[in-house]
Amino acid sequence: MDLEEIIVADHFDTRLVKLARKGDQGAFAELVDLYKDKIFHLAYRMLSNRHEAEDIVQETFLRVYKNFHRYDEKQKFSTWIYRIATNLCIDRLRKRKPNYYLDAGMNDQDGVDGYAIIPGDERTPESEYLLSETQAMIHTAIEGLPAKYKSVIVLRYLQELSLQEIGDVLDMPVTTVKTRVHRGREFLRKKLEHKAVF
Image 1 (spheres, one colour):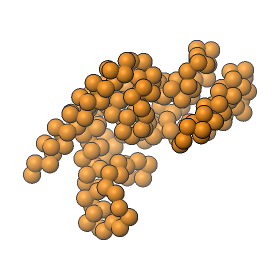
Image 2 (cartoon, helix red, strand yellow; image 1 turned 180 degrees about the vertical axis):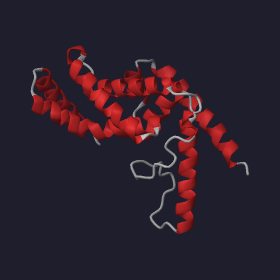
Image 3 (cartoon, one colour; image 1 turned 30 degrees about the vertical axis):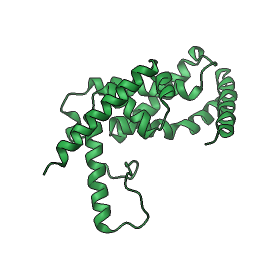
Image 4 (cartoon, rainbow, N blue to C red; image 1 turned 90 degrees about the vertical axis):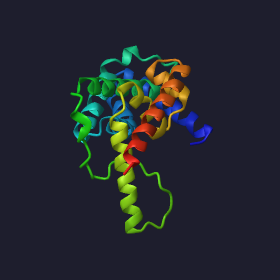
């Protein structure tokens, strides 16, 4: 998206939000259509569970609807809705038993998600196998991150938000975001190095 497209998208969001706050159900339905997939992917990447991700989508829009009066129109709507969804995911992660994520989502091969990190159009069965193995290792490593690092890693590298946007979503200074991204990456690197030792 170039700058002009971003400005147009933000203006469209603002108009829909204003209408939805006044009770326009059609405008609210459009907001749901615009954001449901983005929220689902965010939640799925954080929770690695399709059903929980679907629950987060529903809960996010329920909270948006109930709390429209709290939305500050000076901030981007996308930042506000990502904050709600991210906080709901973090709450879920905190409530999980420590061993929950050891096998969660590893058999979820429905094509909803994947960390495509090997470029190239000509894939052989061998490269496909290596890719799926690498994706599984990264998926497991991200699953094992503490919630405070997991949220910034998912928002930064999988949702591709800027450090400033992550700071806005998580309501923390950019310096803290940078620190957590750095520590999260170190955590992942150590986990992946450990897994790579045969």
